[in-house]
Amino acid sequence: MLWIARLPFHFGLDRGVAKRLIRFGAPLAAGLAAESALLYSDSIIVGHLLGPVLLGYYLLAFNVSSWIPGVLSTAVRYVSIPGFSRLAEHEEASFAGAARQAITAMIGVITPVVTGLVVLAPALLAVLYGTKWSESSAPLRFLALVMVARLLTTLGFDIQTSLGKTQVTARVNATWVIALVPAIYLGATLGGIAGAAAANALVALSVAVPLILHSLHRSGVSLRPALPMIFRILAAGVVAAVVMVVATLTLQGSNILQLMVGGVLGGIAYLAVVVPAKERGQLVARITGRLG
Image (cartoon, rainbow, N blue to C red):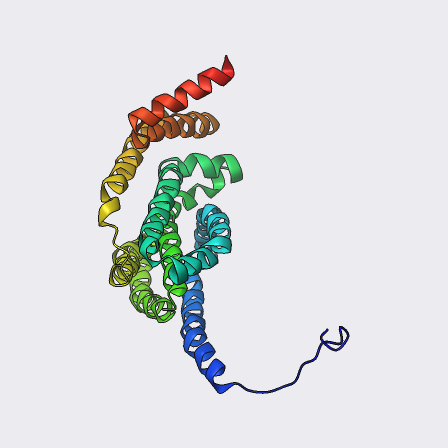
């Protein structure tokens, strides 16, 4: 292409640039390799220990749990690394605040989704695939929590990459894999596909998330100022879960009604708690004004 465009170019090696690229890129490549092991080690272990039929149930749960994180992480990554990199270069004072807001917003977005997956998993699978796949609902509930960890760690990796600290990705993912493999082996042996998924969630939330939060804290991004809002979000998730459980118990026998009514009422309950009273009043006034 350069030759067709008749642009001047020549081959050469700038050792200084090469060293910087390797120093930046090698840990990132190692971290991506470890991430591949994270994505597939559980399926390999489940298939080896429990056979292809139970592996099919497990993979269906894994795929459903990956829908929202797949969309969110792809959308976020288009803007997170360049955005945080710009802040790190020119606006260091506001970098920590922006990173903290991004993490809090991510928690706020994924909490109602995960709550819905955990509570409404049987109804969701029955509506989408039929009751013959109901055995996937137990692992789905745990794998939904794994997706929370994946989203938070991915955002944390982007923040650290923006600071040039790509070794964090390799270190956290390697530690995650080392803890994950024996845990899933033990979980699958003792509890089948639900045990494997529970072990996956336990390692993700107790190993990966604390590690990435600790690395962010060491880089100057502390979540302490955001803790009141994070606790409010989690409390809203609990309230939404209770509402969804009541809806499912009330509407037993109709999966689609459980899904629709439980999802809508749970969403309303979540917003009622997570949105401050003043802003909630403004939102209601705006909606009623448009309807009027």
